[in-house]
Figure 1 (cartoon, rainbow over the protein chains, first blue to last red):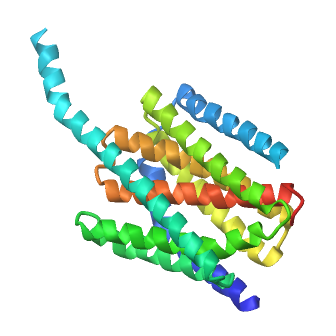
Figure 2 (figure 1 turned 90 degrees about the horizontal axis):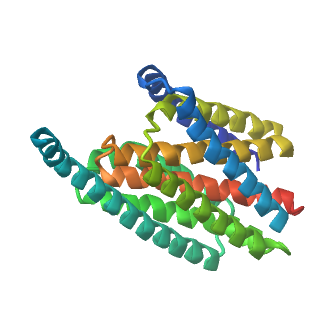
Figure 3 (figure 1 turned 135 degrees about the horizontal axis):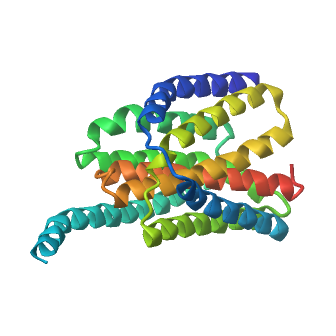
Length: 59
Length: 223
């Protein structure tokens, strides 16, 4: 249904416009992470990727 | 020595407040998840059309973004959280009905549900055990989320299945990051309102579940 696509697109555009200033503020005010901080984020994310691959095998 | 005792004594009220926020957040989160499961079952029983999902999600997002923050410090905020999560659950009904009608649909739904639970509990346990401060992720996650929304907007018209799969995978990564970020904010006193904390965590769980459904649906050869 085309009207559903247009409706979804409009909703997404509004959401992006709403979030944009918040994202800009967060970019300015977020403290910088050290390499060990980033590693503590990357490790669980890799675990999740592996877990999703396991779930795909189970389907 | 006295300084240490005094430091502990000073920290205690704040630590108590933090653990109270965390406990209230998890309590409200479990109740809202049960409630949205209930509304999803009602929606499935009523055989709602697919457009219900779109209308419910847009309605819930508008209420969560514009109405909830005004009532977050009052008891009405709890009612609004139930309204938002109930609407999102109701919107899930037609999606679940569609997957349930597939030959392997029941398995896909159960795996997505279980997978979402494992991801959420695993990441929450990781933050609670390490007590690491993930505030440095804020800007990165917001920009990543905006980029995913732009990609999703493009894919509404492009309708490329591989891109859809990629978007779902990235959404899971970003939402996982938000679980780390939000939970860390609660335990470090950055979020003191359990109503807002609950809606944030609920949204991450909802997005992970929808994305897992899509990934497992496509990879299960059903799309």
